[in-house]
Picture 1: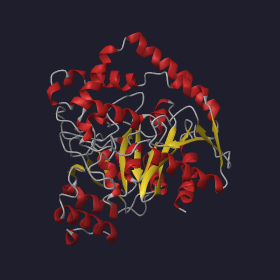
Picture 2: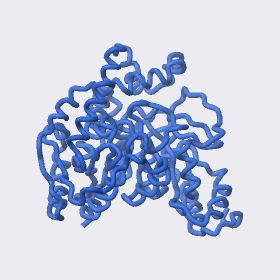
Picture 3: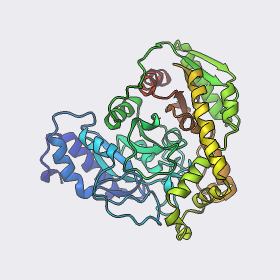
Length: 429
């Protein structure tokens, strides 16, 4: 392949060649990560990239969750029941990646319809967690996280409805970023919950997440506030997020907190009344009702083809009355306003996930699955509900990672990335 490609970016050609060699030489190690590679387009992509004089993502390899339309390929969303045509166009944000010089490697595996935080897929297999053998990689952007953790891609594009980029990032020791919802177009992306879905991304570090975000986002949002507070408070909520925490994760979080405090940041612990109100909200109704509506005409006739763990969640929509669902949306708007007024230019800081990655074998029990899934999503879903931005930064203790999560209010994405870059350096010391 090397000889066939005329490119002024020899490093990128070599990287692609090395990846294909890895797959060929050790297929077992890399199984279940991708549902398909875009191999037939590599030569065309490389030649197009070589024509670019510059680009935010030039020289970088990008994996794409199977929810995103990619020209010339099917978008199945990790399912067997969706019979999709070959896409004639890219999703808008994927088109932006091409323009920025990123090379699209392949569609990554995922939880069916993105409906779980664990990353299990019975149709295409579940990618093994590179750091915890036999354990889930986190979801729903499971293959994307593993592709970064194994150095197959520089950036993984995913979605985040309740933590689907940040949970797998925390479980695999990488960085995951969930932007404010409307900062990146969702045109050409399959829907789980129109209310909560965001396009997100994962990478080895904050800088790569920042590059990917800037390449994909719409024109700079006029609502993005200027960096006004160089010394923000980092607030640990005492009434949220620590109920089911694993003892080793609590120890690691406290050590990370100590490092951050000693670096000069003001870390405070306090009760947040708005989070007591938030905990009473039946957030599951958004995804259940909106997913059931989105795929109603399809899944009604093909229930036998759907992962039972996913189907169980979709069918909960039958329990929700129209008045209840519409009231839920009104309550959300009120709580977003309260939350943003409280947080101002400060940040929440919490563990991204309060448990270690569960064993895949244990998740075969539906009761265990439901409990592990609920706990995994507990802290991360807050940012989706509040339409804020959020990032998970890895912190390693005894060579095992936890995620340190920072949440900011709506449209503070650039501010969050700036502060996170500094926090990342502190945690690496």
